[in-house]
Length: 578
Image 1: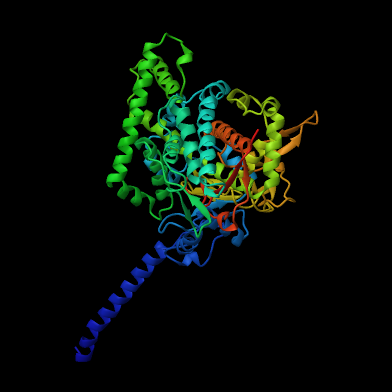
Image 2 (image 1 turned 180 degrees about the vertical axis):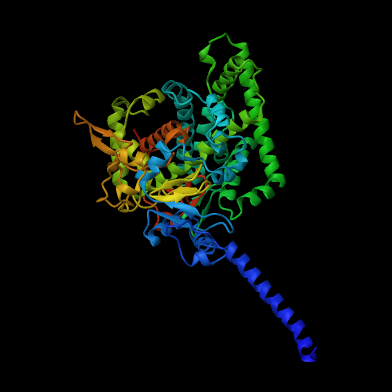
């Protein structure tokens, strides 16, 4: 054989090997690229990048801390009510739905097509066997049976209301003390609102006589301050800072539980983040503290139940009392021993603490900001309260707990609702099987974000042909919403209308709202959240005038976690003397 030919063989083999390797690598690269769902708009450049939209999203979130704002921006850029983004490498895309009417349909009428997403469940992993993490099924239904009647008017008015009212009185006392110590200066209200919201929820869960309180701990600390010796100025002399109170270990665990979940939510790799966190001593201590304290409260409730006379309803003074009685009743019906010490029951109780606390405190902080920056709204709230509680106003006293839970104050309800609308966290659902959405094929397992900060919520709705909608969506009557008023403006009047008698009433169905979800998987504690917000806002507006603060202290930046949370909340208060 020719020597030149023999020499060429190895070179040819090398070339073939390199070509095969290149082809294999290119095939692997192509295989790992994002796989768009046909027909649904997406960023073409992201589809050609192994990391998809993730780099762009992280650049935005690093600056704004608001992942939901980035998602709404994608919908605007693509000019589409349904679009897709590639956020997790080597995974199927997320769908972003920006249409209120279709979101309603998904939540209310398409339970066989869409359910709670595994994505949301993973983000809430530290909550353990909390019912909101479960798919709709037997385990979820079993957990919800413990909570039956907790949101009934009787329980809310006679148990929850008075407990929350008592804790709100502590906030009034704290702010009167702060006003004196700060000599009328501005101070941060974020921690105070966090504390009173937590105290209110704990009073509801464990009873009004619970002997731990974050707000009282702060009062005790400030009462030890001598004049202004322990109080300082911050941010170039812009506001007065106060020392922090020493919280009970369970209060610290409850606050840390929220922080842990938010850390996972904001992680690019939530499952890995949670795996690592579970190995840390601080996480183990938090979970241990939570379990020990909740079990102690359950045991005490069980002891009270068995020592009371059968049917003695007066002994039910907390959510835990109600839950243990429900477990006893369910056990009798199912012919088994009650499991008061089971981890699922413990997780259910603590999960309600964490979920209710953060969403309520976040909404209250936004309300304070709006009332501070809009004196005319604050004046309307105070006028509405005086009209609703004329005896208290004429007698120069605060409304009682009984008065607060009975009277209706439409304008106050509208203020609470409008603050919720403007501080949205989107709802997610997962396709249970291959289905359709706005005329597009949706593969099983696809996660859909129902954007509560996009078109038809904070921006004018996209024009959508009725033929694109599902049959159930077409059959439903769409909510009408006046888009002529700036949808990004704080305007409580959106939620008010005149009834048949000409009276102004609050209409919770007036427009788009996803703060608590909808349908069977909507937030269980919605009524409690509204009750706590109404009581706390009433007592603040009744007792204090919220004066303007420096612009540097009234920014509207936020972070996304369990709730859409304002990064600043400063107040300058003046007690209203009667």
